[in-house]
Length: 235
Image (tube, rainbow, N blue to C red; front, side):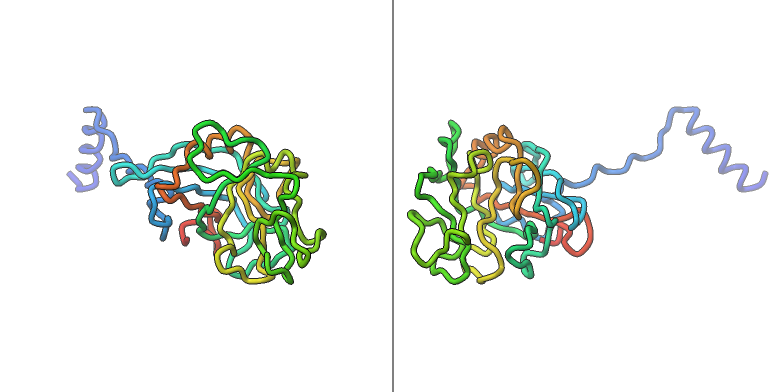
């Protein structure tokens, strides 16, 4: 009998006995495939299909027993100009900066959702976020708006009643601001469409994230794409 016939007969016999081909192992969770997750035990990932996308998915994760476990997810919106590498992103481009960032504090026009452990700053009538590159308060919350920060180059937070009902500050260009790189990048509630460079999610998802986030767990947010130069796993 030819060798090929023997192999065919063995294969048929195995199938007849109910033997099945070996299954491929399940893919590792996204955070387990990333270069860096910030060193904490909580992580938010915000993934878009490509740099030209304005929609994608936000997922929040917990690290338990050495493994990353998905705690929740929601549809997300990104900048009207798509996404851009956070290291080279320029202000005024309406792009969401990719990269890995901490989450310094939360804020909102509405009261913090019950169970929120994060520092939560209430938005008041005189609350502004300065985006004026000539101001000493560049990329900072100011209350009231300082004289060297032009109103046309700042966000009057209380006027964004939907978006800033609840929000988390994203630490992009925050700790050592590079003027012209960008200011006022947040994870916030959806508005009418794409953002001016932030990441947004539905209102209930934002409330869930705030109830979930634990500052002791040092949560970070990783923003990136499914592939290409800004693929999220590089961060």
